[in-house]
Length: 192
Image 1: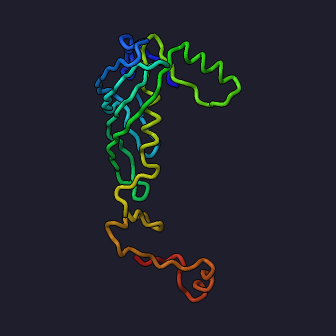
Image 2: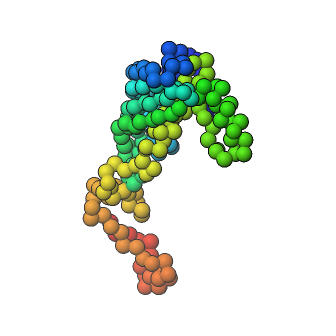
Image 3: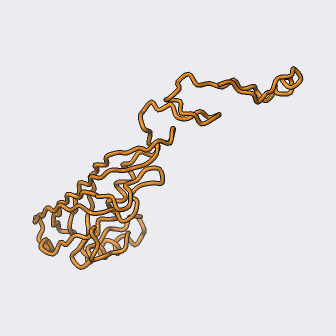
């Protein structure tokens, strides 16, 4: 979990909901990504706006946070290395347990049957940064492409195959290279 920061833009107050099951509150906030949210290939850039529409609901265990998150991710096509932009619109939902409830669950789970540590309310606030980061990373494409049928780059010379669909090279099989040398040809000679 990310460090709790009471002054952070990802921190939301829940004081008016505390210990009153059934009480709800909706909030809307546009925050800046503190650092890239995503992977090395595609991510919401640091400083980019992230729109968060949040519903907080008081339940017996704590506060249930449901967030609709919208932003724009920027990356590179894994085939041709052109820039790729993707709209990100994901839903995140997480229960932030009251400290006494979280301790109760931890005590009953002393056998280690659950690897997941519950998120916990701290001073009647929740920090959504880690929750949003986790849902954004899983929603982004693992190998983004500029278009589904992107042909990529030529493996021999790096030319963009989308610009020249007829692009080709005559490559001599390295096993026959010695014969080509004897015949006076250059095995590394390529036609474009």
